[in-house]
Length: 412
Image 1 (cartoon, rainbow, N blue to C red):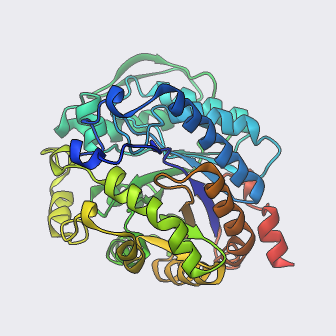
Image 2: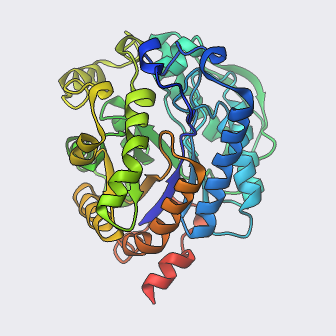
């Protein structure tokens, strides 16, 4: 199994009365009211330092993301972050996972194809190309995408990007949403015909059908933990079986918040406040900013209406103890964390575990201690899962036969 470091890069020092002043992490918070440019510069550099620390600690991959106009995560251009990580990790066997640039709000999408090709070249062929459809607040409110067009723009754009990476001749593209008279991309990706493609999603809808149809990797970004993901994972694997795909766990990636300390009690003490900050202040978004009519296809809309996880809770009223009990955050001693993660990995058939080892208001030194303890005491017990039975076809080919130091030490 591949175990990766995911980072949202949130604003870490919101005022104590933030929830009273703003009803959403998206759109509403005014920069000059709650933010400071110097601090944001520190947060960007701290994020890069934490990611590079994770690379040296033995993680298999580094994951960026893209969001707009919010305090929850503001890697507005993940390719900038990815370029730093790609250059600074040259010589290390670690994937650069972009989760990633949003196609519907980028015109023309060949711009993203170029940026990703640059990253693949800089990294020496270590890119994993993530293509989120984009949250409604990002695509519609922040970038002016017509809601009903969001998904069809996405699918046309991805088809164009894949062809631009691999076409052996100059070609014209005359689609519904994009028209380009001459496409002859410079540079091209080292990985041909294209890098591994991961498509993030928060649940099972038309996105999952699309992922399975095209044999990409489904990246489940739920934030509600392993326990809450069983319905989604079961439906995903049912979709794979129905469409004639195999049960290779590497088809499925999953994001999980994790906090490790010497004891369970210490972990709850350390990570409780940062967990409350994450869920109470950052993750909470007013429904009218995400449930925008037209953004979901019919099947996806039905699935969202039937889902009980989000509708049954009020994140702003929950405390750390409930986050821990529900499994939103897996915290504890190394043995506690690895047991819980292994149980979830086996139950959901997770091939790529994306660990959010920084969340909320966590200072950099706390984050690095978390990474260090996780990489030394937990990762070696997770890495051997699935390796003897399945091939990871959704991982850069140059990295498939090479294990980082932590996994090699566990094998010995």
